[in-house]
Image (cartoon, rainbow, N blue to C red; front, side, top):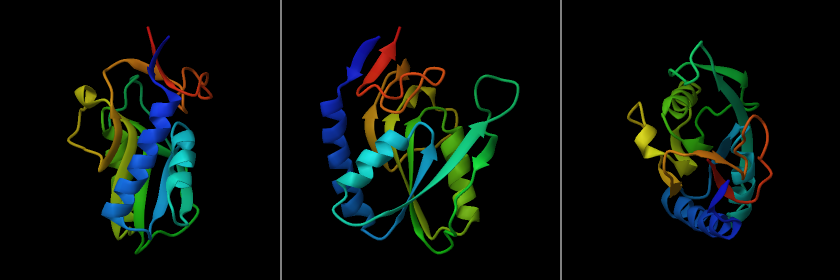
Length: 167
């Protein structure tokens, strides 16, 4: 494994993201975090806000016979609260094909969210299959297999403090 992004760089960029979000989106919104990969990022992001925030979680998974999502997701754990009329900040660990975030975004619209902004820690633009762009991006990364800081390799490595490329 090769260290791609250190813990120090992650934490500095997350503080910057919190300021960008506050300037652009204001202070009154619900954070919706996608499990499992985004939980570490979400924890550090919400601690970087200078105002109280509420958080809810969704756990979605791709399904089908292929190894890559085809845009169909199964909701394993849905939101616990009603978001009708709320501003929502949708947080995920990584945006690659765009299928999952595009579908969850659509689900949040159907649930009545007043406004939705998206924030991802990592963006693998070269893997995009659908035209979806996040509003707030931590880092653009190359098309490598990444682990650490919540991202896993067969459920291992989420506890690594940096982002590592697995060769």
